[in-house]
Image (tube, rainbow, N blue to C red):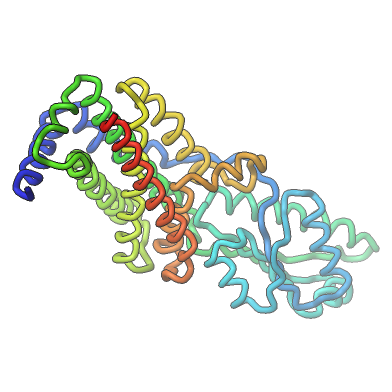
Length: 370
């Protein structure tokens, strides 16, 4: 039985290698996407999560925090006591911008006519980080103008800005994780749904089902080549990102690759599930495009910050696997986080994998036993 399975899988590999269009998608598209998404544009933001380390706790510091959140662009989610607590919030992805107000903030402002604060931004999304820090700087300047109009030398608030995890705001630090998530979804889910739908459309699937192999082994044999080639594509993009764009992997490479395989299986489950519903390639392509590719690009946080979207789209994003995988990639590659930081995202992907594989298996049995 195992020899038959290996022979079947080898035949699928040979079929893919002979198909120039499939090879183009598997090899050329990942490289093209790396360069196409090299310069992504982030839209205006609202409701961005911030944390404030208020070491002064005086009237002026409280007024400044209220001024920053009054516009609706910033949402105060935490008030850490120390800079190390703020660092943990950044690593866990709870906040995108941090502000540290020193002790005696009000006294320094009014007596010495000079106060200093620190802005810290999460630069794993460089365009977004620059937008947040620039807007926060403008709001602090307006606050300074409102509270420093008593004549004499002007009152000043000096702003020190830090960009965590990506101090040079290199765009590749953001788009490399997004491209990997998109490639795995396209190749694993879309190509899998198309190849199985093609077998159904041409009638060859019925011939395969009467072979000595059980139906599920047939499906595994058909998707195995795409799984292997998708994983190699992911390795290629990680390598290109590191060699050409200096995108680091600060965390565990083994953990990153293991969770890449988990996401890959989720994508395969989606592809098989779509193939059991779609009667032909055209419907499989349309379903994959609208249910997988567009949501992966638009609702995963890859191109646009989720916090700026309407609540309905934010709710829909919770069922997008790429959202969790991109968060995992950014945490491991850029923040050097361990499994404890990404345990929730990993659990969500594992549950998705179990649900999708179970649904795909049940649908497949129903379709081909009727």
